[in-house]
Length: 130
Length: 253
View 1 (spheres, rainbow over the protein chains, first blue to last red):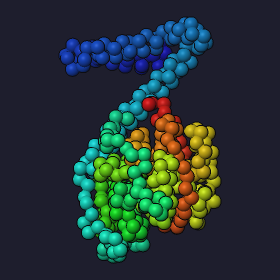
View 2: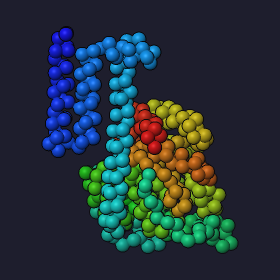
View 3: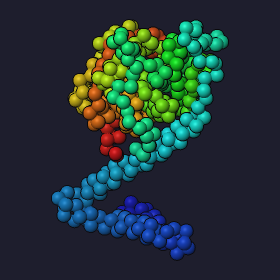
């Protein structure tokens, strides 16, 4: 085993074990916890047996296993980014609507009498700067 | 998005403006027109714009977009309605808030007018004319049909590029794609789809024009650039992230 495998494989396995323990304690939803455990265990397998990725990659017509994993993570990352952006926009829209409603509810009418026909423009107080 | 515009009031007359009998004049009944002025930290420039506006137009609403510089006080010193965003949301959001407000106040026509003193109040009547005649649903001010006083060369190039892009993307042959001075009918205002908060709204309005086949027209107006308004205004480089956001908006819709 290489140094990389010595370091990473136990970390991934530990993550999976933690997930399973938390599912048993009930601090993690069953489905999500099991799915994450599967991801970590899958990672452990790929680290310990890199040739699996190579055979997977060549099945899809990609020569090197590492390249296959790289492409996968790229797609996954882009998807995650877009999902996050979409959620952010939803939040922004909600915040805007909320602020807008509050602003419209608290609208204040003109405090000076409306100018009547022929009257001079309503100018009160000194203008700043200008 | 999910925002619901207030319902239109009953049957709309095709041309709600008042025609002066015998004169053939097509001046709007100004009490049925609302002028929306979005303002963010415009205290030094807002007063002048409001002085000019309030002397002639009875219904003005300033949408203070969370300013921190005394814009609120300046607005309060004038005969205008004041709507305050609790947060700074962006000019597009402020415009839509003002439009919603005007619709709730039963406006027949809505004019959007920038707070920074670049627009000329004298242009509003001409802008309203095609709407009052019933010839258009929305009228855009164009500084390229009219005049742009003191416009820096860089700005001219950028706007020319924006016009080309607008024509290519939306197929609408405008001469000025990003002018804050516009007038629209109540029906148009209620149907505008504006989902983004910042400066993308100009493009979004054009998109609404295309999608809903609105009758549009352009009216020559004067834009005055001053050092003051330029220092506050948009930086030229802001155009690129704006474009990216517009694209993203299409992707996630």
